[in-house]
Amino acid sequence: MSKSSIHHEGAEVTLSGEVFGALINLSGRRRFTSQRLVLYALLAAQGQADAAAVAREALALFRGAHSGLVKGDSTLPGVFCPELREAYYGAQGGDRQILAFIELAERTLHAIECNRDSAALLNELVASSTPILSVLNQITAIYEEQSKRHANQVRKHLRGVITDIETIAKQAKMVAFNARIVAARAGSVGKEFAVVAGVLSNITGEIDDMVKTALSSAAA
Image 1: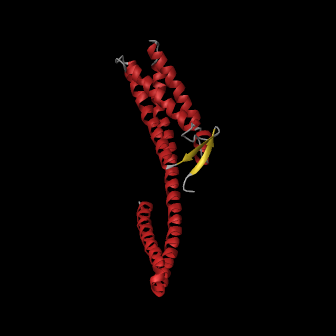
Image 2: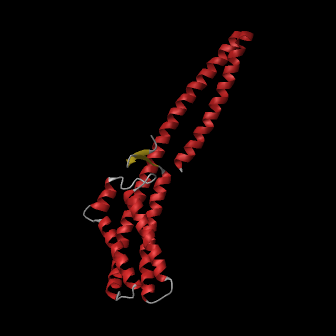
Image 3: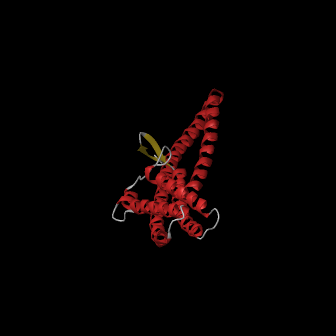
């Protein structure tokens, strides 16, 4: 099969190009919102209007993207390969670091919104922005690599299907050729063979066009 599937909470999730695109998009959203969150937390601490609300929105997007990537749902697979399991739950502890960043951001924003002394928390949040971005970049690279592997598998499968089609087309051409010979020898009695030969020739011509189109797609 050109598409692989996994089971998530009883539902089958197909790992297609669209799914990998969604995963990479969510992973990129985590990177963007992590930095946006820190920036607007700083602005909120300086008293800029609406900055706290923007930081809250960024935090919600960051938390939602992380939950979707790790836990999955009916359309997303969650942590679906050994490389991701190692990145999230292995020695590096990506999931632990991300959740700690979320918790720190929550405490920092709460302190800012309640007009409490947030300087220490804010400094800690700013200091964590570069390390967490490094973690997120490494995880995003895994999603991108998995997407490339999937695309290569699809191309390989497609080339195999094309080979089978070409074999069938060659056999059909041989049948059409033999039908023409029989029709020519049988004279008026062989008219039906001539019709069959014509139809088969049209079909094999269409198959050739389909193979050319598929080959172009596989090479892209």
